[in-house]
Image (cartoon, rainbow over all chains, first blue to last red; front, side, top):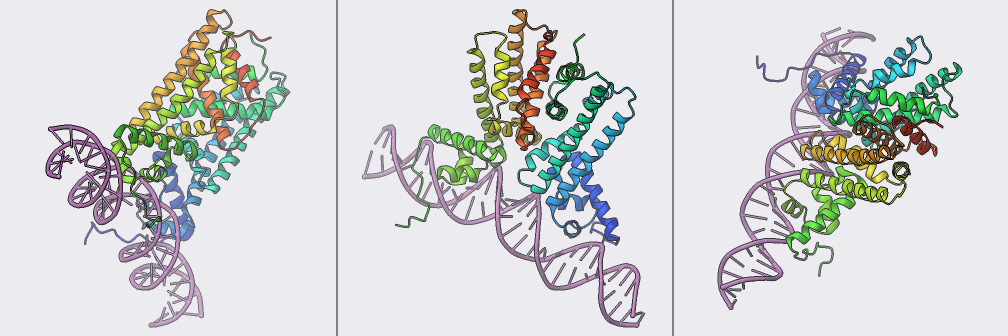
Length: 203
Length: 203
DNA sequence: AGGCTTGTTGATCAAGCGATCAACAGTAGG
DNA sequence: CCTACTGTTGATCGCTTGATCAACAAGCCT
């Protein structure tokens, strides 16, 4: 029995195989970035021929777009749930920022940054990116509005402020991606900046 | 005379050719991004054989790193000069932010974002990226210190604040790159955030 | 004028990518 | 049982990338 020869993959149902492919693509993207999600890499990871990936997936651009959505979408629901569990309406936003900026999400940050670049040649991906950014902004805006209703924040255009805040989060995250400047005060600094944008009276 | 056939390139001195290559690489990067700086693209632009580019340049990774440094370095000196010309010590930082965030620098922003991704596979580029980030942070820190000496700002660690501020700038810039959210208030929002980080008393 | 340095080119290689196609092989249904 | 469906593979194409090498040609120097 030539164990070196690639054994034929066990036959599985289409839906099962598709799930396997999606999972493999996700783990590859988390480990090595979205651009490493190739049919050959995915095929090798789950022990199937590269062409089989393509057979199940219609186009690699689409698989990459799906993988992006999967990873980032999971992060968003995770964070949303986290914010929901904070009782204090004015504490949700700071808690969320602390969680997002704690430096343990470099995988997802990398996917984000890569998506901004790849999105210029992958229209489907670009559309998913915009959708996820909208969703993130909506989450931040809703937290701002809650705080506003509680009389803590005072902001004219919550959506605009949320967009700006999201930019700040992503920028600081991207920097940490390059192995640059891991200041422990960054959460505090960010919170002060956010308070200012939200019209919180200082002191 | 077969005009369709590529005429042999006029012989030039090594330094002259190198300058030509660097200039071509820069313009290509500005137009289509750093990842479009290939030996074939550069060669085609200045009408020489692709291999000649490599002959003058040692390695493509190095040419890309040099091109990054060239573009970003030029931006930095431009901005530095701009800040230097602002008489009011407390007005330099706001002026600089307004200039950087005015949405006319998408070319350079794109190069930045691309560099964070490419830097993971191009060690030389990564090192240049960190150096340029350090330089940027130093510029911002110096402006902060000037304002502090003038008694306008009050900040414990100017370098840390400068790093944070740089992250905000880059994040907002990156977002604008994806054609997302071009709010006209973003400069004002950013300035309020910055004032808060710099310990400026509100109102 | 002749020769040597050096800029320049074309052929060629090994990778890598996405994608198509015909052929193989399990598995369920008639 | 054996046929039809469908998961699966291998061969192959066309394209791209960086890189090496031998050969060619222009010009400077003696």
